[in-house]
Structure formats: C-alpha cells, structure tokens
Image 1 (cartoon, rainbow, N blue to C red):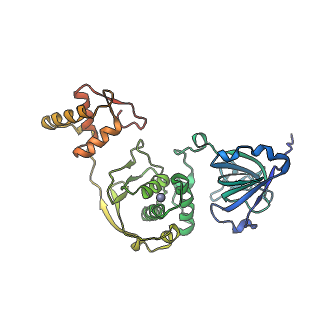
Image 2 (cartoon, rainbow, N blue to C red):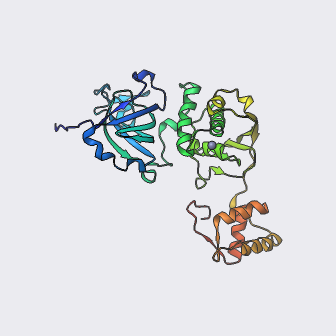
Image 3 (cartoon, rainbow, N blue to C red):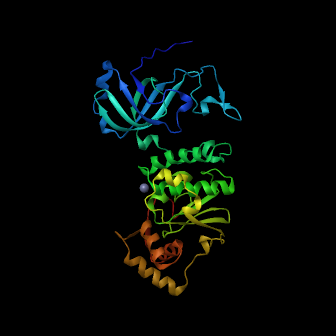
Length: 334
Ligand SMILES: [Zn+2]
C-alpha cells in the first residue's frame, strides 16, 4: 500500500498528560509551532477559532469498531482508528511568537500537531446536523458529565459561559430525564422566554429552529419544553450572583418552580381565518406596517403578537389587500 510521509509542524502543551484524566471538552492548552513553519502563522490572529489537526500517537491503530452496540470507527470520533488523526476546533485566545494559546483542547501534553486550519463558521458549522449521540437519551452517563458536555455545545452557540446558559442546560436535562429522550429528538418542542441566555442554550441544545416549527418565541418570564401533549413549564427563580458551575450543581428547586401541564390542541392554521370586523382592523394594521410596499414576515409576526391573533390571520389580511409578504428563509409563510 502507498505510504504517506507526514512531518509534525508543532506540539501540544497541556497540563493534562494522561488521556484518562482529560475532562469532557478538554482544558486550556497551547500549541507550539516549530520554527521552520513559523511563516505559516502570519495573520493567524485574524481568526477567532482554529481547527487543530493532531496525530494521536498513543491510539490503537488496529481498531475498526467502537462503542456499544459496536459501530464502525469512520462514523465515530474515538482516537482508535487506522490513521489516528484528531480534529479539534478551539478558540484562539492569543498568539505569542510561535505559541498559540487556546481556550480548550482535548489533546494531551506532547501530542504531535500535523496541521492547523482556520475554523470557518459558514462552512464548518452545520446547525441542522444530527448524530446518534444527541438523538438518544444518554442513559449510562453521569448527570454532571452530560451537563458539562451540553455546556460546551451551548457556549459554542452563545459565545460565552454564563449562569443563564447553565439554567437552560438544567431545564433541558430535567426534560430529557422526565421523558427519557435525546435533546435533539424532534418530539421536543420549545416556547422560549425573553431571557436571551436561557433561550440560546435551549435552541443550541435542542437544535430546534423557527423554520422547523419546533421553536416558538412568545417571550415573557416563563419558558416551556413539551413532548407531544405533555408540557413542562419553568418559572426561573432569582439566582443572585451564581456562576455557571454553581447553577449546574445547585438543587433544581433552587433554580425553578416547575409545573407540568397538558397542552391544548393547536388551532390548525387553515382554520385561523379572521372574521369580517377583525379583517378590517387587520387590513388597516397591515397597510400601516408596509415596508417598500411589502410586509416583512418579521413585522407580520410582531403584528400578530401585538393584536393577539394567529400570524396566519395577518397573512389572510395581507392577501385580502393584495400585499405580498416578503420572502422569508424560515418558511413561515408557504
Ligand atoms: Zn449569557
């Protein structure tokens, strides 16, 4: 077979040397790029995140199956595989000479680095992607491990670690435990509150989007997670100055008042036609809100919210007055 020759271009400096002791999501670490490759670092600081490609030199190269039930390594991320390449995205905190300071790496000390590329959110971040890992309930994992793992995912989406994010994680984990369901399972639906940090956590963890119909944003103080007709309503309590870690470890009763509810059947959209009087009022509201003779769909949603009607009723009023609702990528109006 053809052989390929790789030269390490650098090395990982990490406080963790034993792979068994590496926490989920890694630890702050540095990558030292060797002198002959220093020119390849020019302008690297213009990127916030990098992909570190490493050679996991202690991995077993004879392995083709892993996990339980066993699956092929080419559909997994385990280090054991014929060519043990590690691929880890990390935030670039600083560049000091040939040293790259990174927020977290799950590669142990002295791991050879064979390449570095920029992380391009437009290409590399596929929010709609799914793996079996998030689709099933993590029955065998410990609560804290699951939540630490979710914290990494939520921080990637939100941009920083904060207590609100941890509140969203606690709520999602409670819902997952209640229904023994994976967090990205399409049976879960969410109604978000006005707290942007909690909302970001719930969206990141569930993978729900406005276009998928699984996510609604009524605002307010309370948020809901539902499965079929069963709902969990979360009233966030005042948590003072708690840190994200303190929130993850606190008793649930200290964070929320939680109520179970049964959801009502939603009004099918086709039936949500306004009556004649409402229609006049809605047509008037639509005319007032036109932008360049079109009704942007975000404005249609705001109108529906303000007037307390279903958004499709605003759509009917727009149709009635011959107004086009401008194109929306979320597929609100089809
Ligand atoms: Zn936040």
